[in-house]
Length: 194
Image (tube, rainbow, N blue to C red; front, side, top):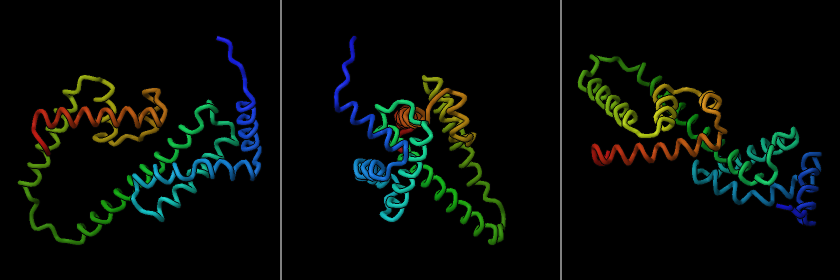
């Protein structure tokens, strides 16, 4: 196949080179092109306008740094790269907030005297954990089982799992999303709605 370069391709590559060189006008154009889409991606996850603004700015800061360092391997997929950075920042923010809330709840719980461990609650939690593991073990795709177990049960770091499985962060998110859907379908099939 013979690829013919167009002026549009040359203009786009020139624009990207200007971004890499730190040209303020090119950077402003990048922000203008992608700001609405980034706000939508982040806003769907965090559902807070102030946080959406902050994470959108952080997305552009990271993207510009990575472009300048030449870390964008496939310039034709710049849009996907930018969207992936935004989505990952939003998901990481939500996880941090959940952990913070959990730690605050633990801190508050430590101040309350535990009269006696609730054996019924402990037994129920143990049964739920066994069901979750059972459903994960029944998933047909090995990678689904591994990703769900390592990420949610073993609570391993996403970067380590990506490195072990040779996945990019975006690929990991896709694998995890599909695995969770398969898990949910299997769970509902076996036990009904949670």
